Amino acid sequence: MPAEPVVRGVRLAVDVGSVRVGLAVSDPDGLVATPVATLARGAVRDGARAGDLVQLVEEVRERSAAVVYVGLPRHLSGAEGAAAAAARAYAGTLAQAIAPVPVRLVDERMTTVAAHRALTASGRAGRKHRAVVDQAAAVVILQDALDAERATGRRPGERVEADPRRGALGGPQEDTTTGGETHR
Image (cartoon, rainbow, N blue to C red; front, top):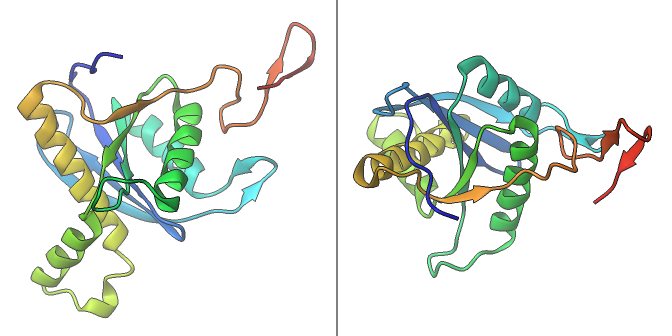
């Protein structure tokens, strides 16, 4: 699939963790990434993730986001492990929920390290990093993506495709012609 050209609009970035999700946003021209929030991961209920995913969907809609970048945590070797699999699954569910807004996975190696360094350099005590490090990592993910956009004129990363057979939050979608569910 060819790379997507860059169009004007707000971009969001998500740093997916097992406990928290960091969120950052850009201006419509894609110049500067700023932190938005750290969201607590919600539990899965009735096939859909509550809390963080619902809040992300609201942010995308309220801000009329043009694209959402999700950090893909790879090992330094480039290999993917359990954290990358979790980020891919999260990105897939998010893509379902916000379609047709594109979701793209971007390499986020070393973003948490960079976020901790930036927080330390700003004078924030190490023990206070936990509350905002996910936001700071999302800022690093987004700023890297914005820089890549400017350098190439294309959206960086790998597009996550939404499955038209699944509902908005990833569950089966009702088939209105037969009254039943459509299954994968």
